[in-house]
Length: 159
Length: 291
Image (cartoon, rainbow over all chains, first blue to last red):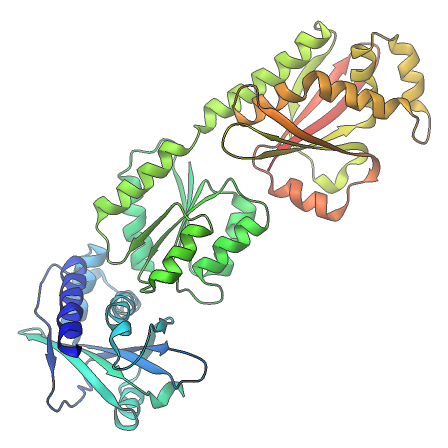
């Protein structure tokens, strides 16, 4: 059941990335260990299932090179014309879309409601990573670095 | 054509704006808002034809924005969603509450253009409606009164400035939806129109109109005017022919418009203020607003 959900989720994630970016990459569900990359950008969105359940979260880690390329594709500007705020704006939108792709696939949970994304410092993201239960993550990697979608349930930062 | 884009990410605002610009809309004006509350304030003051909104936004969500727009009587404003909201139940709710379209992010430019064009097909063109209104109201009154009065459109004044006016609400229906209008008519204007309809001497009515207090003629005159012209006024306001008038609610003469009515008038779409001039009677005023 989870395997089937994962395939559906991966299809959605890959489509989302390819629609918004001009540089398609292939995401995979990874079961192994992972260590957050402090040099990447981090974003997170809380996921609420019900008032009585602890909140989960979907987080996005994106290398700066991927973030710039994505912003170039979405804004239609040269990389040199993009501000840091514009790059963060684009990554927030990507985090929002990815969260919608995965938020209904948390194990044993019904439909989740997502909120608005926040940019996190690498310190805050490490705090979340260490204190939360990482249920699953999806990763894509190429010469521009990696993009990781983390699914935390529960997430210590939002509870 | 006025379109408001409500989304908390600037890149999405920009992508939607680019798509709108490819729809070939004449007289296009686009504004953006970054949260639901800001969007609502723009809706109130700017009265867009279409609002394209995200679901998840700070302060007020897209669905809350949609409900607030319609709860405050701005039923003429079309609302569409471009959102990553994953819940089918929530998206269905948006449609139930009147959303024209719901597109899932990420969506292509073609999908956005297609959805907007479908909405455009349903909208009456503003110029056509406006011309019809101006000509029709002028011609309605002139046809009734044989050119005895001249009619000039004038700049709207704040609704709170209306004093000693006759307040009438019209409820009617064309074919598929209910239409509403409010007429705020200067007390003297009612006397003038009543005199003309009832073929009375202007000097007699002029005397009546100068008296303090409310006399019994004014309600009759107002009813006479609306029974004679109500259908045509509706037709001109809504750019529809021969609507059925369901109800006329007359509040009678009010010294000042109630605050709620002022708000309703200020939110109206097709407000037009007119000055009626009669050589003997002088000037009087009326404002008509569709809701």
